[in-house]
Image 1 (cartoon, rainbow, N blue to C red):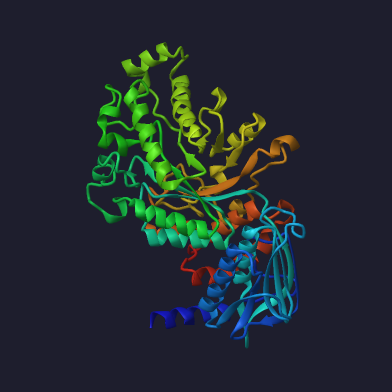
Image 2 (cartoon, rainbow, N blue to C red; image 1 turned 180 degrees about the vertical axis):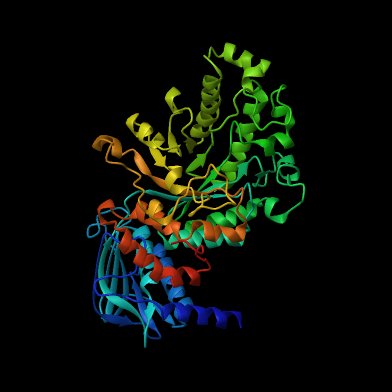
Length: 505
């Protein structure tokens, strides 16, 4: 019964895919797209062809097969070799030169999807899923598309510390990201409100730090077991999504301090900040980070680094001693020393670090990427020759209201859909040789005020605007055109389990 209902919903979605002449409703908008007369009709036992070699390409063919079958009920077949008709998946880096790019040609009798690499094929499949339609028949509209990403880093940050989300929900978020061609999941797992990673080295982090809410509210308490994390990592990998876990330091660490208060400054009882004067703080973090690296095996780990409460280290005798011992100028330089000590340790393990831009003026650890969330921070980083991710909060923080609301803090600016769409991660004010340092951007959802079920309303439809900002060429952007496509693909988003915020326009 459940599967039947799901199929009915999908068929309803398919019946509401209007295509205008010369325009397909695709988000993010491809580099070039030309619609042609006619349709490729999907019939039972339609063939998907892949070369006999290439295990990964076969997986992608199965992914396309399952996606179409789940949406339409049509049965497809994956085959090796060539025939005159069907769907063909082809790897050809000479024909498609842009990294992660693809060319898609849909004729009435044949579809050819050519990718620069496997990721390019995967993104082409996401486009096919979005243009899948139904009139009298189930079909792909004929078209020619050339497409590739503007930036290599296209991220979404989900805060699981303030409010906890289930593993199934996290998977649904990853599915949503993949459909919009986002490729970095920044998972904010540790903050004041909870430590969300199972730790075998420091069990109190879970016994105490994962259960800080006095009401014992399910959405505020809990942690992901190591097996659950590995399950999510495997799922993300299948969607070509890189996962970046975040561990906070030196502030934003109340969950740690509640579990191991000996890491606090002696003058900061009940605080949320590591004592930078205690060697045991460095020992704890190196052990904790090592365990996280062993679980995630990440390319990059986020180490926080912002909003250290002022006045804490200034009162601590041990911090003062460390400043003298290391010949540092002040507490800001103590933070610089603290971060470099941990980040250089991480770097020696072959993992890059990503950190907020707070101490950029004092220099950053080697092999670190700067994430700017205040306006201009990423531009400053690029001008200094640091690789950066521009997460300007005025455009990318989706916990901000999309219209004036009394249930949001007064300090939150309104971030509506049009403003989100206007975001340009690399402004013209940067010189050409500086622009190369901007790796891309992330949109973020901080969840102090957002329960799991409300995540969808905070991110949709604004995440559609963000996806176009990081994928599509800036010169191709047009808000009125985008708005028409947003309205047209709403049924597609609904069919994938997410609702738009009411009153979003």
